[in-house]
Image (cartoon, rainbow, N blue to C red; front, side):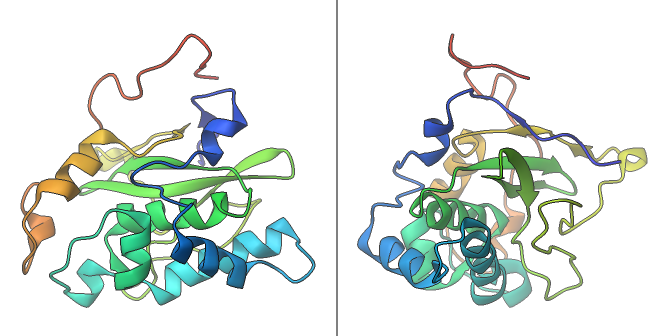
Length: 207
């Protein structure tokens, strides 16, 4: 059964913000977002193009056995490689650069898995641009969820419904400090979110 995506902030502007990770004001991000924008400015088609670009044109490090570590959206775009979290950072940046609200979601699988949610037509939909090269099933779908991997609750896996405006600090901290090299993702990749994430403000909600 699919979870119901639930934003942790009432402000859509929070899901359009730029920061050190989702640096969508970077010229390269703006240029790529412009190239992916639908000719008729249809936000759904623009979001689909951004999703397919990140899913298919940016390698997943594990699939590619790539030793590089990326985390900042503009670096993921430049290197064309990243783990699921890094790819989610890039997709959020490309969407936000086009004025499309986007957030971050997480699943506890064999390790903490990162994906996105996008706000279109007055509702949130989750998207997983991890990459399908090794049998994952992520597809662009705003109605029926088609994420990379099924969640097996009987095996202790957990699907978090929350949509966060910023990436999980436990993920960013790991990616910023881990040493690049073969199999770097096997050296402490977080398995779960930290307790207390996110730090809710008085204007936030857990609807």
